[in-house]
Length: 104
Image (cartoon, rainbow, N blue to C red; front, side, top):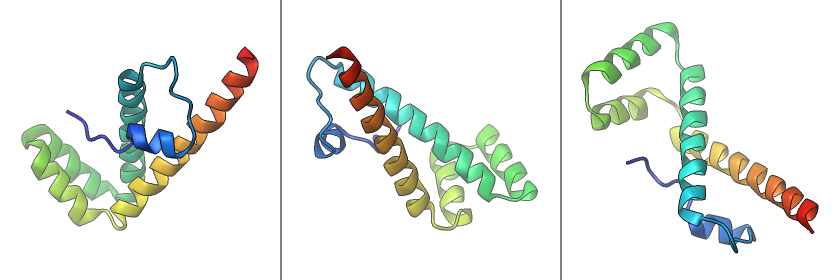
């Protein structure tokens, strides 16, 4: 199960109207996209040797070992995650507003 970085409360706090939305599916999709973006940013922050190490770990280890390796090798991981989360929520809020305006 993937971590839930973006929660229903995050969306409520940014004034997203959740009426008539399948919130669970929406959160799954947003968190899946966020995981992908975080993975891309992690990859960009690593050198070639580190990428090879990470790929080898992903092929042979469990998620906890991989997560520990990432925490040890990615500077400012928490900041990277928070930035990507803020960007994605901002994009969603903007897009949701545009869609709402088109429907009214």
